[in-house]
Length: 388
Image 1 (cartoon, one colour):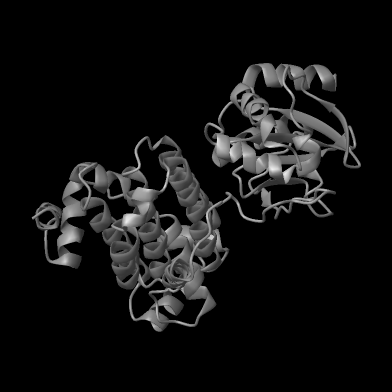
Image 2 (cartoon, rainbow, N blue to C red; image 1 turned 180 degrees about the horizontal axis):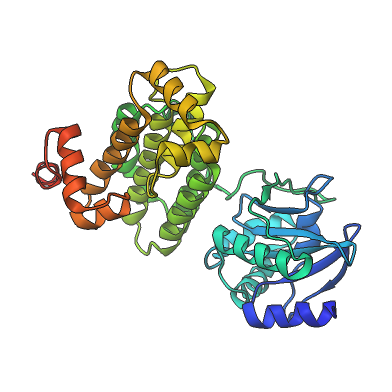
C-alpha cells in the first residue's frame, strides 16, 4: 500500500488526521495546510509501553486519539487528535500550556481543530475499527483504553484540565470537597440540598465573567465524571454523559444557563453512583450484574444477555443474585428502568410513549403496567404530580 497516498486521501475524505510511526518516531502523516503543533508525536509519547494491538486514549482537555499496529509495515497508525466540539479559546490556551507554548498561538491551534471534523469517542472508535480492518483484515470487538500523561520535556504550568485563574477561599474549597464526597458515596438528597443552597442560587455567580464561569463548570464536569467513574459507574457510559454536558456547556450563551448545567450534571452523576451502590451485597458478581444493568438501561436487557456479556452461566447468576438480594434479576431490571423513567418523566422533553420506547419496553401498555406495579401510579399521574 502507498501509505503516504492513503493518509492524504483518508484525511481529505474524513478530515480526521492520521499519522504513521515506527518505534515511536514519526515517519509520515496526512498533509495538512495548518500547523499541528506536533500533537500526534507528543500524544503518542504520553502512553506507556507496550502498546496493545488496538487502543484509544484521551486527555483531560477532551483530545481523543487512538491507534493500532500495522503488521505489514511494522509500525503504528495513529488516528487523531480530534475534539468532540469546537475548540474554545480557553481550551486552546490550556492545551498550549501543556505543550509549553505561548497563548498567542491560540488562534493557530483553534484553526487546526476547525479544519478537522468534530468527532466524539464513539465515532473515533468506528474509524479505528474500519482502519484496523482495512490494514490488517481484522475485526476487533474490543479496543483497549490506555491512560495518558502529558510527557513534555519542559515545565507545565498547571495540572488541572481547565485553568481556574481566580483563587478559591477556604469556604468554597470546603463546599467543593463536600460536593465530591456526596457524589462519591451517592448521597443524592444531601447533594441536591447543597447544590441548591450553596451553588445554584449563590450570588457569587453574578460577579464572575461568563468565560471564567464556563471554564469553572467545564472543570467541574471533568472532576465529577472522573469521581463517578472511580465510584464504579461504567467508563463508556460516563464518557458519553460527560461529552453530552460538555456540548451543552460549550453551547451556553448566557450566564444563567451555566449554574443549572452545573446542578444537572452533579445530580446526574450522583444518581448513577447511588444506583451502583444501592444493592446491599458484598458479592462481586452482584456488583457486576448491577453495573451492567445501570450501564445499559436504554437497551434490551435479559438475564441471558447479562450472562453472555459477563461470560457466566445464566442459571448460576440468577440463583446467586436472588440469594444475595432477595429478588430476581428480571424484577430488578424492571425496577431500574422505572427509576430511570421517573427521572425522564420529570422533564417535559419526552412523551410517555417515547420514554417507554427509549427504555426498551415492548409496548406503551406494558410500560404503563410495569410503571404502575412498581410506583402505584401511571406515568401520566406521576408526571402530573411532578409539575404540580
